[in-house]
Length: 265
Ligand code: MN
Image (cartoon, rainbow, N blue to C red; front, top):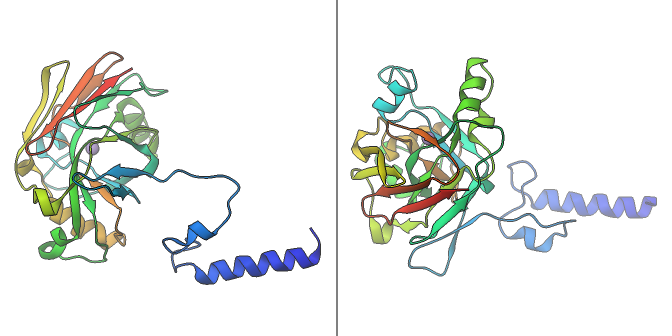
């Protein structure tokens, strides 16, 4: 590259940087349409019920040990633990249309692959230090989801005091149904949540059993991170998590949402 070209490229880059947001090099929403890239990177989009629009997923947050009985089965004391969060990569989403059973490949490296059925809250309005009282105003809608977990890898890393990412944050680890807007479905403070494997009941609880409500989760998360539209929050799983193997069909349920059906292949 000659010096003229180099200078031009630098000026273009500087122009883009100026146009960027304060958040590192990220371009403003919509600006990427005008930028040439050497290859395309897929955006994660989830259908919105009753709309032709799709929900663009920005980040996936998950809360850990948010039902007391599940916290106990994981070996911790639910009474003394403040909420803690981890993330999955955005492209971990595997969309599952209601009325269908999605094939979900058994992942690499694990011999103990676990289901965790969870309510998912989708954020439509961002913010920092959001009060518990105003937190639900930030919710766009809700979905049913699975926080699939390579339990042996998660535990192994935990035992070594290493990040448990490999157990939680891998390809297709976040199956989820469509997003139901609050405008049509309201909020979810109570309601049955269950999971069956091959028709047999495994998990069975109520959203009321959450230690930290969705509103409290949003408030707490927003102290640590600026929440943005497109963020989704997996709100934790009840007790009796367990393994699945190839051939198993999982059916998840949350009152007022269509069931989620996934087959391990
Ligand atoms: Mn979970």
